[in-house]
Amino acid sequence: MEGAVCLLCTFITFFPSAIHRCYDSAEAAIVSKIMSGKCSVKMLKELGHCLTLLPKSRGDEDSWSLMMQKILLSINVHLNDTFQGVEEESKSIEAMRGLVPPGKDPPPPLGGHCTGEASDQRIKRPERLQMLSVSTLMRCCCTMLTSPYPVQVRVPIRPLIALAGRVLMVDGSLPQALFPFTTGMQQESICSELPVLHSYGLELLSAIIKGVRR
View 1: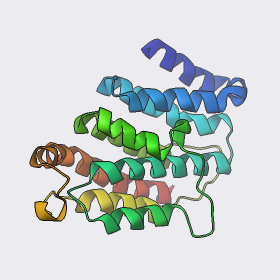
View 2 (view 1 turned 90 degrees about the horizontal axis):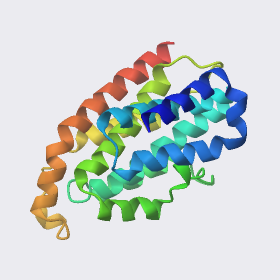
View 3 (view 1 turned 135 degrees about the horizontal axis):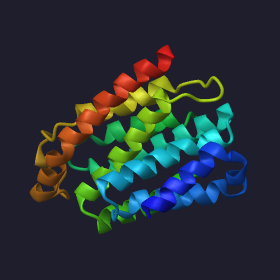
View 4 (view 1 turned 180 degrees about the vertical axis):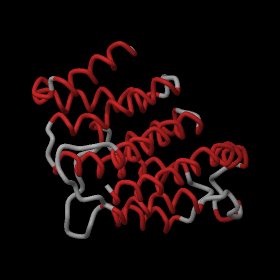
C-alpha cells in the first residue's frame, strides 16, 4: 500500500490535472484508510501527507479552505466521542458551533464519512486507534498551515485555536459521577493517550503562528 500512496502523491504533485476527475474518490480512499485502524504510524503519516496534497491539485483557495474545514469537523466529531467522560458536554457544542456558523450548512463530511459512522467506528475500535486517527488529522492541519500553497489563503484561526485549546484543556480529572456511562477503564485508556494529543495540540498552536507569519 505504501507504493500506491507514494504514486498518488506523485500524481498530485506532478500531474494535478489527472486527479481532478477522481478528486472525491481519492479523498474517500485516503480517509477510509486513516480511519480503518489497520495502518502503522508510518503509513498514517504518509496517508495524512497525501490528504494535505489533494487541494494543491486544484490550487485554489476554496479547495484549501474546504479541506481544512472538513478535517477540523472530523477531528471534533471524533473528539466528541473520544472525550466522553473526561470533558464537559458544553465544550463539544462550542467547538462545533465555531466550525459551522449559524445559518450556514456544514460541508460534506471528510471522505464521505458521516458523523454516525464516526460514532460507530468508536464502538468498534479501541481508544488508542481512535486517537491515532485524530492525531493524524491534527498533523494534517499542521502540514497545511506550514506548507507552501499556490495562492494566498485565509486561515481559520479561531476554529484552529479552539481545537488546540479543547485538546489541551482535557486532563481526565472530571468526576466519574458526572458521566455514569463511562467506565474507569475507558477513562484510564483515554488518559494514557492524552500526552500524545497534548503534544499535537502544542504543535498545532506553533503551526498556526508559522502559518499566519507566512
